Each structure stands twice: as structure tokens, then as C-alpha cells.
Amino acid sequence: MAKEPLFNVRSVDDVMVIEIVGDLDVSTSPRFRVKLESLIRFGHQKIVVNLKKVHMIDSTGVGSLVYGLKMIDPMVGDLKLAELSPQHTNVFTALELDRVFSIFPTEDLAVSSFLSDGATMH
Image 1 (cartoon, rainbow, N blue to C red):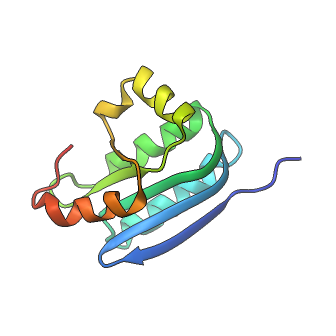
Image 2: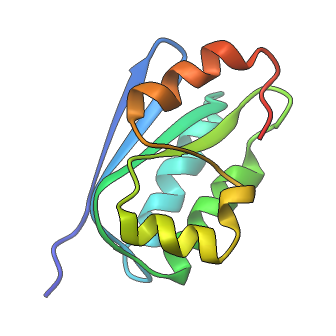
């Protein structure tokens, strides 16, 4: 039986960081969507999803990330990805999702990019 993932949420200034530990797949994506919806509905529009400790992402997991991105007002914020494994980076590139998401090699760079964005753009 697969272990349930952890969604560690913390704030860095006005940026919410969600660190996922475990898989992001058909069985865990609904909980992740609820977490994202909750943050966004409470006014958090700047979100970094740290994928460093994610072992596997399936199409449902990718769909959850896209869902979260579409919920955010692009004039106010963004959903950025950080610390993808080389395998996940290859998948996101092959699917051209690197054109949809801002992807950063480290969480610190993703968070600091909000400070330098001014107007948040992809």
C-alpha cells in the first residue's frame, strides 16, 4: 500500500511554499487540489510547489498543478515549480509544460523570482 504524501506548507514573506513528499498521482491528487484551493481561496496568489521529494507524478498530478495555475489570477500571482528531478524535468519539457510553468532549479530562486517579477509573467 502506498504511503500517503505529506503536503508541508509554509510561508516565505508573501509566498506560500508547498513541499510535496511522496507521489502525486491519481490517489493523492484530490488531496493536493483541496490544499491548493484552500490556499488560493484564502487569498494566497503566489505559490511555489517544491517537487524535490516527489518520486512519481502521473497525468492526474500534472493536471492538479495545471488546475492550481488556472485558479490563480496572473495579474497578481503565479504558481511556480521548484526542484524537479531530471526525469520530471524531461517529462515537463517533452509535454511543453516548461512553456506553461515557471520552473526553477531551487526553491530559493523560485521564491525570490516573485520579488523580482514586479508584474508576474511566465
